[in-house]
Image (cartoon, rainbow, N blue to C red; front, side):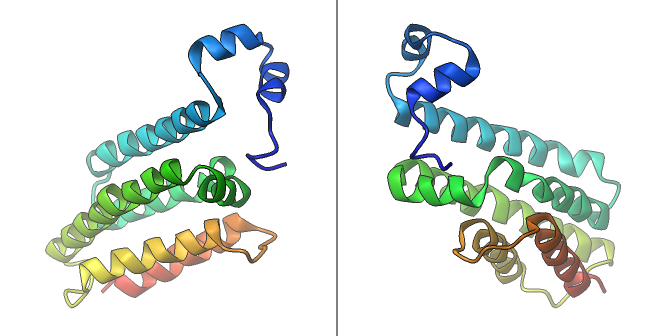
Length: 167
């Protein structure tokens, strides 16, 4: 129903906790929303840190992060992000800064790794490629256009990106 329409009463009813318990941990809904977004950012950060270590090469690393990103719309739904942007702009800004300061540099490092391994095109502008990839995903998650199958669309973006960078 959207982030804005969910009340603290709805949250307590759904989670089976008392209002007192909820308010002992979160003074208001904004604090709760901010905590949720921080946990999402933390979870993605942890995956990014291990992604390089679990990937034997840059292609696998890009496939691993692409697969991980494929599941994001289950958590960061377009309605959630739109409401976040409209009603909780400071928290939305944290999400955007995370993309700029963590996701984009990760992609750039992966691209550099692939260039060094000889599997990605050496003429890639790493900063522009990372920005374009993130911009496409942002438009899918924040855009006003309805897509019946976000996973299929994100999978297509991932495939196009990989085909564009592989030598």
